[in-house]
Length: 350
Image 1 (cartoon, rainbow, N blue to C red):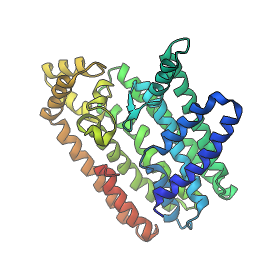
Image 2 (cartoon, rainbow, N blue to C red):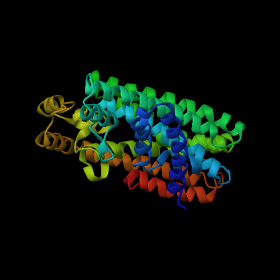
Image 3 (tube, rainbow, N blue to C red):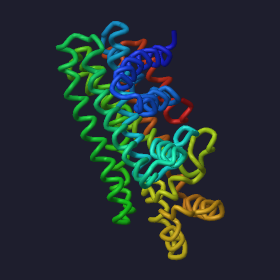
Image 4 (cartoon, rainbow, N blue to C red):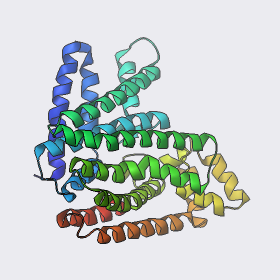
């Protein structure tokens, strides 16, 4: 069975148990229980569990169903982050389907309930995101891994959650402060995505395997540049990507006003007219297709797109060099998997 299939099986078993517990509380909780299950199992690339699993295997830990279940907890953490992120950004869709807050807004409206449908949708998204966060902790601890291994991994798990929250807030803050500096964009990319997506999962896997400091250093050297390259690719796709691939409308990051490295580079190179257009268009939730095309043209004309692609290649090269230097310290089979994941992360061919 493929790794993703095993992760999905572990998540399915856990979520089925949790959904049954919720339904026992009240008959009206069926939609609440099903929402998490369908959101988690309805899509996603399982990137974080994959890196955590191979981080453990690379440090010498044998394969087991308990390990699979333990690292699958990171997918619940990701579900929590996505539910809250979509609410913060006002996103209508996720993975080609209505986002959680939109889904429950529609449920309220279709049911003819009292009160404000959008407020109900917001409340449901907050609660379900919090539920996924709690369940991620529960699955991490109840998967059957030795208590000492789980205790060792908790430091990485806890720091991972702190860092991604701080990175998310810094992202929101940069938007309202109109901070388009490359320094801030790079810091947001590092803490909101790079460490959270790749480095921390690798280190969590290393902790589960009781790896030494040398292995952890190799994992950080691989994970940080690879994670930053992953986020930069995400930024490019958020503006230029195919909605069929991204699961979100074209140019959605522009409507949300995300101050990414791509935008920071464009701002630094733009003339006064281009800056006025960027200022007017970025963060406009009603930006139409013509407006998206106009901003895309600026990102291209200023060289920002080319600069971002160049940085992606440079970061991927750093990660590849770090991978090569870890031979002899990290299990060879895991390194081969890392090499493949490196290509997939940069191309976003997950």
